[in-house]
Image 1 (cartoon, one colour):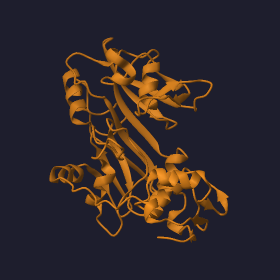
Image 2 (image 1 turned 135 degrees about the vertical axis):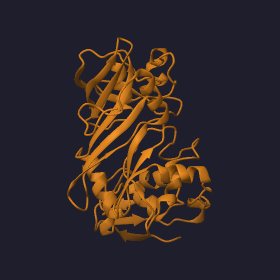
Image 3 (image 1 turned 60 degrees about the vertical axis):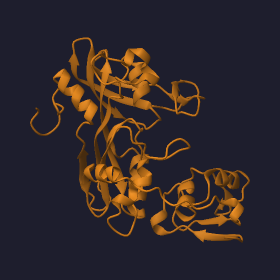
Image 4 (image 1 turned 60 degrees about the horizontal axis):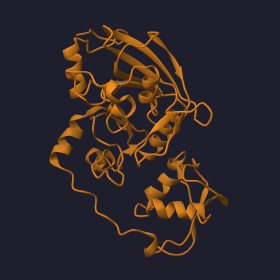
Length: 323
């Protein structure tokens, strides 16, 4: 494509990030090339300079500079999806209607790709294309975190769900097995977090001066002597690695979290894998306006640890009989 032109943001594209709008319309435009176009002011929204994370609105006009072959990497075919991945993803569906798909994301599966990640959920979403549109990601879970992940089946639903997550209207509950028992047994962690330079891997550190606000409420559901505890975590903000860092701040790192807990995060006899699970999400359905709660059963290694420690499969405040 060549020549300067402008495009108007469609009604179902309101509230998208600008970089995601470009990814939708120009899927072969590389992230680095787009960053350069934004940095030099060649891309503009309603005549003004813009950043990649800008939330665009329906009816706005986006200035698109000439995009030549040299600006774009060669188009790559989508990687072939293994039958094992296809079966695993279909089996992971927890809830589905004409607007939303909810998955129990497996631990170890990245949500999006990167320079060293070729196998990821975003590359498998055609499996869940049950209609004309390919499902859209509206939030993320860390690669090693299992549990409820919502997908939007249309652009309009994606915009509404993204706004719900951004405005903290969605209520998220996580389960974690931690090394040690927190004191007090329940409370609120209010510790600002800042990203720190690393070897390319995401990492955060407590920083009351330069960090962004990060708040987590927690409740100890059950203690296993002084050795470990089963926690319910309710993040009120959504910072990178917030729950992992905050649990370490409590002095009780999440079992299997070597990055933040080191050797203290290991418990003999239990799998040395991250014991963090997105147990449930409660939202107002973007179409019906009714409350919707989706709950995910524990991942394999966590279910095994629960069994070994004699923990029930339901929290005391959850509906249904505990086993």
